[in-house]
Image (tube, rainbow, N blue to C red; front, side, top):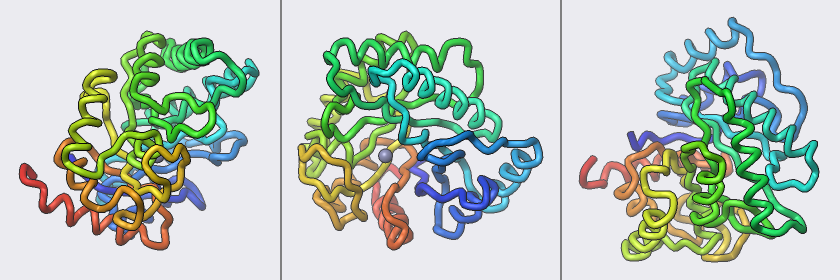
Length: 277
Ligand SMILES: [Zn+2]
């Protein structure tokens, strides 16, 4: 574990993703399997499935993860949007199972003018709808949000509530930029411990299955989602050492590709100094 990778493009088809990841120095990677903005998903034929798996092997990619499209909203007051969200996430789980992806992560959505308790309830119902009757191998993760506006799942308490109310034992993808913008500090060893205590009291440390390791352009508690290169943002490089010491998981970067190779190297350097590695 503590394998390092980043989000890569699927331009030209998902079969191109493993090579792109390999060229950047990824040991694992993340991708969309469809346009994140919308539209039908391109079919994964048995030929594509086979070639994708061969490319993973050829380029030394140990695991791949799928990010759900951005338009998902389980807290929408529009029932059609909620239904479409459940259908798309289920499709991504099925598609992930086909190509051997380990996790699909999604952002629960945003509740416009709805009462918070009601928004939590319908979000949990949507998640339950996704999972009902699903028997594939790819697991579903809720991603912690950055807390802008009426975004759902920006605290560990809310994630706990959504998971509990859904009736399914789902995991969580922890995004460092998002938790930081939501007010969870990880910049010092002490701060990391306090955040870990918050996690332990709510969803539990074992619920966290994957780390999105991004620095943040936004200050602590700034409630906006702007990723920054490792060490260039408000979180700072040291935090990623505390994080790696705390979580023996895979680390995925979602930073701009101009310097993502440097970010991958930075995380590998940090990993080399972890005591129990
Ligand atoms: Zn993320």
